[in-house]
Amino acid sequence: MRVSLIASALACASRGICGEIPSSSSSNDEVPAFREELLSLHKWLVETSSVSGLEYTISNSVHDYFLRKGWASVTTGVPPRENTPSNEPRADVVAWPKVNGVPNPKVLLTSHIDTVPPFYTYRIEDGEVTKNTRISGRGSVDAKASVAAMVTALDELLKAGKVAQGDVMLAFVVGEEVSGDGMRELNDYFHIRDVTFDAVIFGEPTEGKLACGHKGALQCDVKAHGVGGHSGYPWLGKSANELLMRALLKILDTDLGSSKVYGNTTVNVGRLQGGVADNVIPEEAFAGLQVRVALGPQEEGGNIVQERMRAILNEVDPEAFEFDCSQGYGFVDANCEVEGFDQIVVNYGTDMPHLKGDFTKYLYGPGTIFVAHGPHENLTVGDLESAVEGYQKLILHALQPKDGGNLEL
Ligand SMILES: *[C@@H]1O[C@H](CO)[C@@H](O)[C@H](O)[C@H]1NC(C)=O
Ligand SMILES: *[C@@H]1O[C@H](CO)[C@@H](O)[C@H](O)[C@H]1NC(C)=O
Image 1 (cartoon, helix red, strand yellow):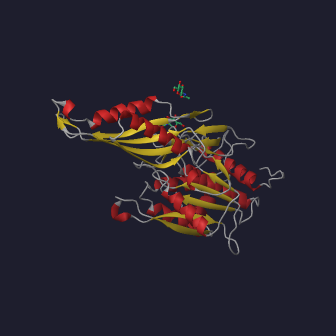
Image 2: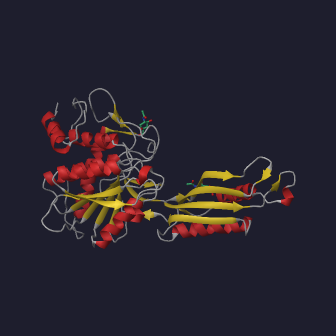
Image 3: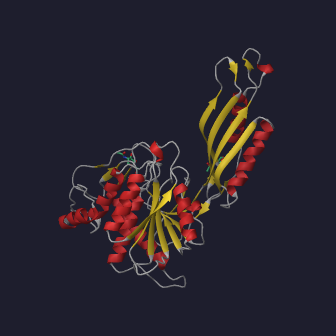
């Protein structure tokens, strides 16, 4: 039995993290010394609602948390999202263990503190806490598990003297679930200040495996313009709904591009609207599409798929369509060749393409994407704890001189 009530009380007093986590016990369960702090931090993050656009509270709290810890922390403004109450102010948080002078970190750990809606409250299974204990709630996986594990991993390495104060920087951004505007702001923030990194570790749910990369993405609006009229005389008009349906089916049935590692490019017809009444030939129709791009390279893959889609629209009707895509990029590779890690390839987008620079990318985090964004989002205490170990290994690997050296945990 290894219950650190004192540590927990201290964490509560010094960091304002006062979670009531049931006490840990170990019959056949190896309890890491950092469990209490890790679970408290994770609990507090998940309990703080932070749906994209409404991140003011969490950004401030995370900033305060680092200041109370005695670290340097800055918030960098991100423009409000439209249609949020009173245009709520937003901010990314950049933090690092204090050093004399200007920090010159080699490794950046980054993840996001916003979540998709709706908010689901934090829950931890009853009974004594073991590695199998499940924790649920919005963001419990995506991506507050990564955030909590990253902070804990860096703490552990500092305590053990395995990294120097100035080696590693943390950045937790907003807006990842919508447009990546938080990471774009962070990119500008680093660019203006000439801050560069050798390696960046991105935290997203990868089941504790090291991702070799993820598919590209493209968000497209398709508008069809027809000619209205009486539904009894369809030949006197031009149905925007019909045009849109024919075009969308053709897009869905066409091979838009595939690759061995990333599989097929896929299209989700996420939104459809069209027409005004059953007996009126529709003049206008609209579709909102999310495309997952299996082609590279990162800069071009999205454009290639976009042009293939445009050609299909032109084939269906050269005049009827307006076609606008944003945030296009091809698949994004990451370094997954690190000893001791299983590998994975994922289909979701991340903030990786929005942070520019010549650094080695790693994509890693606890929990699975298959429950993220759903009402049953959850992970185990063991998942979280393994990720603390995983991040430590990755940080040490990333800090390793390229010509050898053998830093092992
Ligand atoms: C990709 O699409 C082709 C049909 O175009 C299909 O036969 C194949 O199974 C798909 N591959 C994957 C990985 O889904
Ligand atoms: C918890 O997540 C797992 C996936 O890791 C899922 O299979 C399971 O259904 C979820 N459990 C609950 C109780 O929501």
